Image (cartoon, rainbow, N blue to C red; front, side, top):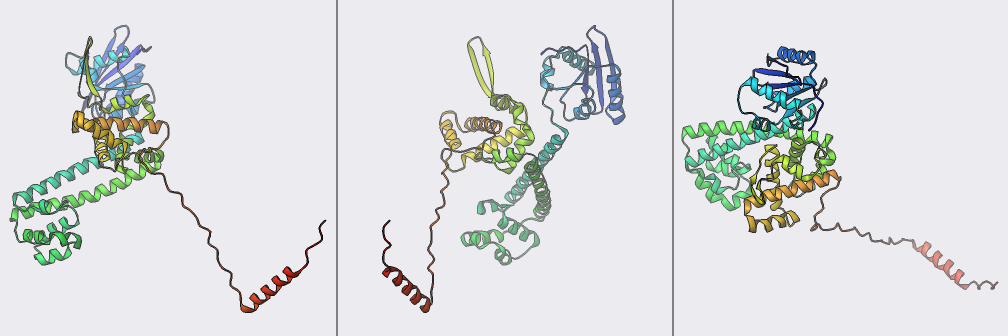
Length: 415
């Protein structure tokens, strides 16, 4: 990477302060420390512009770089580099040395810039990540409820497939309210009750300790509140994606195993798929390619790199699991063939890699996914139906008389 930069600034960004270094090609150096506040960022901006810096570089540390990037990007190039890549080139560890090395690397054009999304897309991505954060917390609460019930030997999970479904919640709420067994049983849907009434009644004869009831009550109330907030966020992000990325959502949902949430998450995490020149580069950016160690003619491939978006990689893996459970399709065949050779875990990752490759090609070429097993739509056949004409007796007799007269007329002379 070559540049014509003569003056570069390097920033070592922390939660409370920023250490900045400006380097010139003639070896001159200038260092300052700024508070990470509104006034501090304004002073940093004025300091950089006053010294006529041609480029600014910093590490992608948490979200601390965002305000710096937004305030400077309109005035000069701002490079946000991968922190791991930058630290590989650094041997000593002080804030001043870090900022100086970043400035030197920026001056020499040795920092590969990370992809920086627009402010609107970053806000959208934050909402999607918040939704997944709340879903994870809800899962933690559900696991805690399982633990509470199992500790009390109240094995509801052995009776119901999902204890957080309609029947399970009715049973747990009934226990909390101290309702008799008959009242709880009457509220349970007959489809569940028809097969498991005896087991449910046996469970309801058990009693939970007071401490367990208190814990269960708190957990259920927190879970209900999380359900409500997750529902609102889900509707918001899906609506935003359908309005701003309608074609991408349509293409993604055509792939087996990809639903609304998966499509929205991939769009939020990846952004513009066309930023990547090939599907291999997108897969590498998501961290689902193997680590490669090569020396001379010896090459070893190990586990995936796990670089890039952790959430994007996770949701893609979930989509791969979902695709294997769909009715017969090419992706499922690919997984079944791989599973017998490399095992279940590696086969899922191979399928995730294949799916993101397919998705990249579909979006770049503006095509929807069509499986070879897909049945062609049957054309609707329309049949002509003759509607009989009804006549009165007088009308029928008159029609018959007119017909006979026409038949008795002589044929016209031939020309």
